[in-house]
Image 1 (cartoon, rainbow, N blue to C red):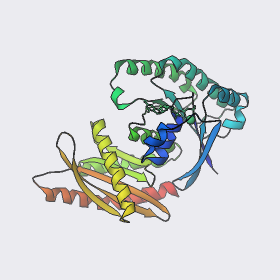
Image 2 (tube, helix red, strand yellow):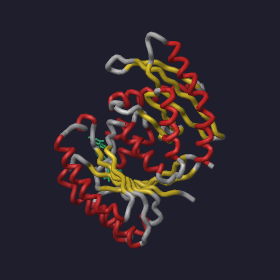
Image 3 (cartoon, rainbow, N blue to C red):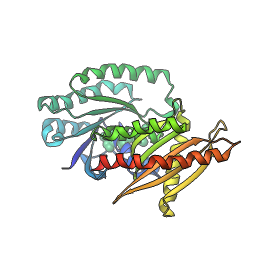
Image 4 (tube, protein in one colour):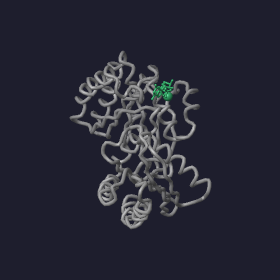
Length: 311
Ligand SMILES: Nc1nc2c(ncn2[C@@H]2O[C@H](COP(=O)(O)OP(=O)(O)OP(=O)(O)O)[C@@H](O)[C@H]2O)c(=O)[nH]1
Ligand SMILES: [Mg+2]
């Protein structure tokens, strides 16, 4: 059975941009700058963990919204997961956006089906993360939206296409709601990290969707972005050079060094990428190398979990 994922929200909210960022990851900036409003619904299928999905991008201009709401069953019936996108910078349209969401949810309530709903405060750009007004406004918006959470499972995210990781994380978290065992991966990584004092352990599918992740607490946004950027480059190289392991060493802006590796794990046709990063001890490089080697002993456990998820 094909699972159905709906991207909904007002026009100009950023839905199509988000989808481009998720699907392209590389060079999507150029594509996004050329986007025009989506006409009606744009559909795309993709596979995740061996399961087929259809991703529906609902054009948000008012004439389309009216159409969907006239015969909602035709468009929204059978939806397994909703990403509801709000332009967090467009304060003047918050009310309009809440109203639209309310009408959508009304349809589901009437049919007594309650798909999980990820609400994205989008255009929460890195330069604005600490902006007082934006934070206050979105907080108020969150409070207004929690009124829906009685019936529905609602999850909030702050995203921006200028922080590709925020978009990927949000998409992964949404998908994880449809896979029972997926959160076990993050639990396992948290456990493993205790033994190795890791900065980050992540497992991605071949398209960069996170299956599970552990970050050292207090890891800064800039550091996360740096690591993700590096990961994307390493993954590109792994594919280009047909390798299954890649080790690297780099430093954060504050000068502290880290070492890491990316290893490909194969399951039939499915490929996964394990990213493991530890602090580097410049005085004792051997220690760092040993740490990186040790992750190997945890791999059977990780593979076991993957098998449970994809079967
Ligand atoms: N600052 C900022 N602008 C963004 C972001 N994401 C998208 N945009 C801009 O928002 C505008 C609208 O983006 P779209 O993705 O076309 O919006 P949409 O929700 O698909 O709109 P409809 O198709 O009409 O429903 C574009 O000019 C994007 O460049 C973001 O994270 N930050
Ligand atoms: Mg669009």
